[in-house]
Image (tube, rainbow, N blue to C red; front, side, top):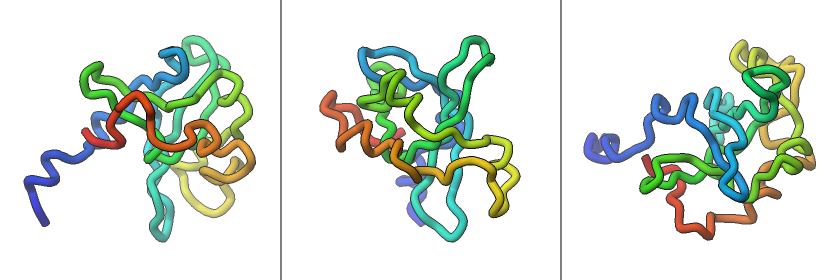
Length: 133
């Protein structure tokens, strides 16, 4: 294990509760949790979106690889995300995700027609880094 590479890596501590911005530089929500799928696979960020002061918010699952970090501005973004595109994504149950098990009661992260892949169309054109620090 290369400790030097770990120092330059991504700490989940710095991700949790971070605000996330979308199109037009608008804040769209925050990162509530990171889920590592059972049996491997890419990590998924659970974002709380919508609502005001915690009322009416819902959770969505976004592949962690789609979030971009802008080191100069010190914040995270989900390129292409708008209020409409987020509403079209299936909601997930954060409490069920944290509890684990096969009966989650919500959508499988990344499943369905509202997957985040439709939001971004690939790497950010703004030059933001992908999952670095």
